[in-house]
Amino acid sequence: MWFIVDPRSSIPIYLQLVNGVKEAVARGVLVAGEKMPSVRELATQITINPNTIAKAYQELEREGIIETFRGRGTFVTQKKKEVNREDGKRILKMLMRNILIEAYHFQFDSEETVGLFQEVVRAWEKEQV
Image (cartoon, rainbow, N blue to C red; front, top):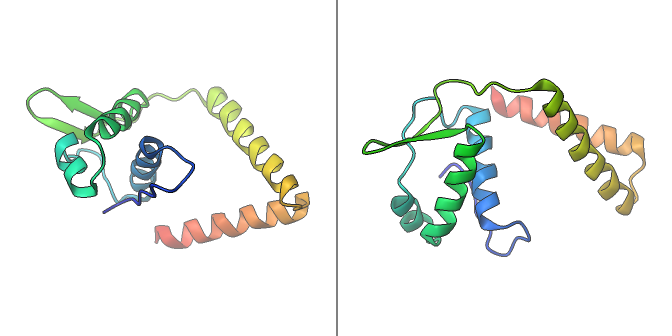
C-alpha cells in the first residue's frame, strides 16, 4: 500500500489518506493516468469507513490530484493543475510559520530547525532516486 493510516494519530484519517496520496504522487509511486481503487475497494483493503475514503477522494479531486469519470473510475490527474505560485508561496509560508512555532515549543533554535529541515530535504531527495 502506498500510505499508512494510524487510527491513533491526532490527524483525521481522511487527511492521512489525502496526505498519503499526495506523497505517493509526489514520489512517483502513483503516476498520472493510474487508476485508483474504488471507495469500496479501498475501504475493504484498509478497513476504514467508506464515507472517510469518499471524503478524502473529494478533497483530492478538489485539489486537482485525482479525477473521477462516471462509469470508468477514479484516476490520478493527467494534466497538472494550474497553480498560482503566489498562493502557493503564501500557504508554504504559513506552514513554515507553524513549524517554527512547534520548534519553539520543542526548544529548537532557528539554526537547529533549519538544519533539521535540510536533513529532511536530503532524505527526501535520496528516496526519490
